[in-house]
Length: 114
Image 1 (cartoon, rainbow, N blue to C red):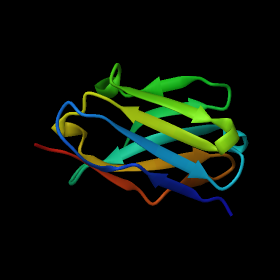
Image 2 (cartoon, rainbow, N blue to C red):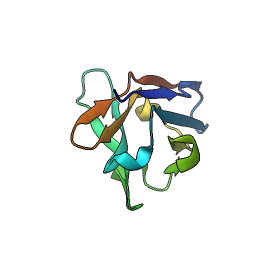
Image 3 (cartoon, helix red, strand yellow):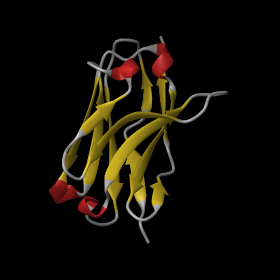
Image 4 (cartoon, rainbow, N blue to C red):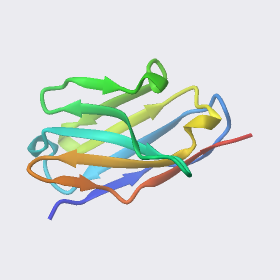
């Protein structure tokens, strides 16, 4: 059974940085794509960034130039480096991985506030 475990969320001031980690319970190469989504209160869950098995990367327009998705194959981990954080980035961030099935982590809270 696949497990995705997120970590790295927390409270940060505007302009600050956080790095989220998504650790998979097996090789991340089994997945066609791994992505980060976020859901703010009262809003739908939305894609933030994704990386395919082949290394293609996609970002939401709202985070381009501020967030970077990367992976460490040896650690079976995908990261989301978030810089220049804004209050509107406040949300629960979820890791998602897709092969034949769709897997979700439990989420990690990111709060950007002064």
